[in-house]
Structures are given as structure tokens and as C-alpha cells.
Image 1: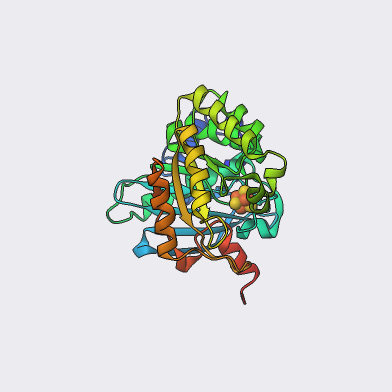
Image 2: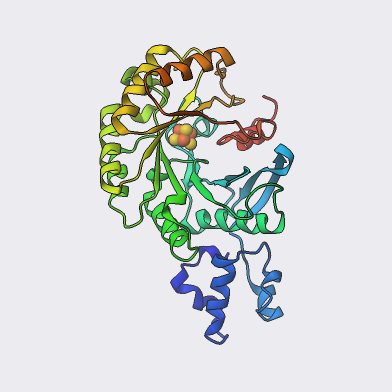
Length: 342
Ligand code: SF4
């Protein structure tokens, strides 16, 4: 499980080898990741066989959208599951990764939230998702898309800012050893306000996505229980600090739920917040989960919501939903496996 070894301790994995082996091994792990140690062609055959590469086994791999969406359910030796999704588009390839197994935030519309929290993922388990997807893409190019991962988003299972230490250490490895630009990495949060401020003071300036889902405290506290601890104003003001400190634009994520947060009043409130932050809004129609009755609004209601935002001057995109037939939204594959009858 080489990715669980801190990079500075890598030499201890190959104690009887010449010093340059550590650099060779590091290059295979971070510069040009491969799916198996057998592909590490400049290492001796015996050494390749003795190395244990991944800190998980891939239990399920599903593809959709003509091979341009791939979802993995990975299982760690202690039995927790990790989900990652790779999505190819004409000009970008986005990898969505998990930061925790399960999630303690209990957002009502989210499959992961319904199952509760198992444990934080280690930095090596987070980085390994990136390395695995990268190696997969090299071995299985997606037609009509870039040949490498252009964007990484922490939008899989878990609240990344509740696992700050390991997420920070994973981003250190991504921006250092993997040579990724901080701008290409998006940390998404449901509003851990103090951690947003802490993130603003890190040396790398990642992109920030704040999941609001409601424009007033009453509704937000229903949908996102964390709002009772960090109310809307605290989250918005921490985001203002992030934008001022980093010079990055924030984005606002909004899962649109039929009859819940798709009213024109909510659109007006959202447009006001986005205007204050200078933020782009991403609307995501709810991907129904097997566990709640919530559903996405009709196309007409969605269009009316979008039109109202634009009328109020907001910059807004309706995100295409990927991989519906493979449960590609956060926590869904895991939910389906745990509750296959639903
Ligand atoms: S939406 Fe995100 S923060 Fe909320 S329960 Fe799901 S994984 Fe956790």
C-alpha cells in the first residue's frame, strides 16, 4: 500500500536497493501512475512483485455515457468504501473524489448523509484515488476528451473541511509531487466556516465551491443541519474572506429539489448572495437517492428558477447530470449496494 507511505519515508520501502530506486518509485507513484506494479518497467522483477500498490481494491467499476463516465467503488482493508467518478468532456476531464468514508453532515437529500460517518480517509487514500483514475485514463483513453485529468473536485463522499489535516496533506502531494495546479483542484464545502478561513491562509490557492442549497437559515437548517452551527451569514462572510485573501472566485453549488428550494423567492435570495460574493452559481438537479422521496423539479420549474436568477443578474450554469444509470451522484452506488431492493 505504497500510497499510505509518506513521500519522505519512501526509501524505507526499498531498504536494500540503491538510492536511486526511491526516485524511480516516486515517479511511478506520482508522475506517471500505473495500474499495476508489473508496469514499473525500470524496477527489478522481484521488487515489482513484492510491492503492494493500492490501499484499496476496486470492488465495482461501472461505465456510462459511452465510456466517458466511470465510477468506482473501492474497498479498504478495514472494510470501508470509497467512491470516485471520472467524467470526460470535450475540453476537460474531471475527477470527483471522496475525502471521508460516509459523512457526518446528514444533509437530507444526500445518500451519503443518510448512512452517517465511518471514518476520515487518510491523505494516501485520497491521493490514491487521483493516481488510480490517472492510471486508468492512460490505459483507457476516453474518445474525444483530453488524455489527462484536468480538474479534481472534492465532491464525492464526505465533507473535506471536516477532515482538514488529511485533505491538506493530500493537496500538498497533488500540488507538489503530482505537479497539479492548485487552481485545478476544487474543495467543496457545505459550510465549515472556520475551516474556509483556514483554507484561505494556505500557501496554495485552490478553488472553493460552497454548497448553499437554501438562501435563508430556516430552510437551510432543514436541508443542511450544519447550518445550525454555522449559519448562512457566517458561511457567506467566511467565503468573502476566502475570495479577498486568495483572489480566487468562489462558486455556489445548489442542488435543486422539487417543491423545496426551487421557488422564485429562493432564487432571489440566492442571486443576492451570489452578487455579494461575485460567485458563479452551479445548479444541479437532484439525483434521486433510493432513500428519500425527494425528486428533481420539472424542466419548466428548473427553467423558471434559472431565468429568475439571470433576471437578477446572476451568472449561472445548469450542470449536466452524468451517469444516472450508474448512480454517479455522491454516495449512490454505495447506497444501492447496501439497499439493493429500493
Ligand atoms: S451533501 Fe456532502 S456534506 Fe452533505 S451529507 Fe452529503 S457528502 Fe456530506
